[in-house]
Length: 161
Image (cartoon, rainbow, N blue to C red; front, side, top):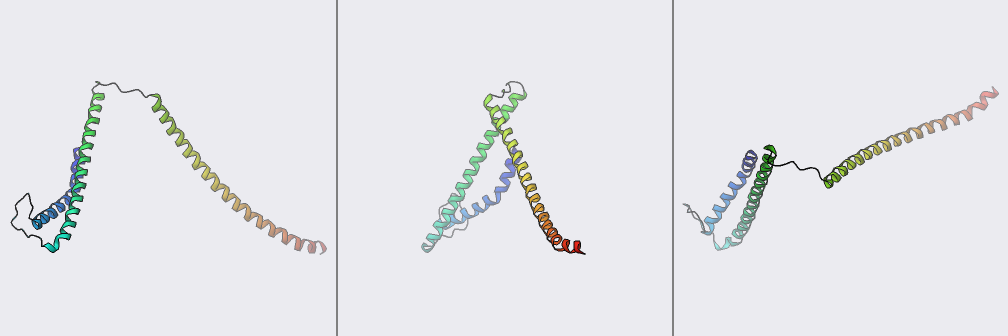
């Protein structure tokens, strides 16, 4: 679990660093900062619209990172709860629940769906084979018509000769 969280955090780190740089630039331009930096280049009045757009973009990115962290926290809490339940099963402090009839119905429905999928595949194979047989039958029929036409043309002459 911790490996997954650290890997996910490592994937998000470049984006977080880029956002930090962007926020520091905006703080320097606005003069509003929680940190004191050596260089401060206040934005001119003409740059107000661009600065406002940058602030909105950063606000959206911060909201995204906030939701990501909330998801990670919720996911970790869920995993911890599952781990606790598994430990209860492991140490015998909790009885493994029996399958209730509703769950059996779900299992039966899954099996019925799998059977239906298998039947569909079989029907598709039969339809494909029938199509091929029909094509071959048409070809044979054309050949038989040709043979019949030749026979009608040459048989009377053969009989006379």
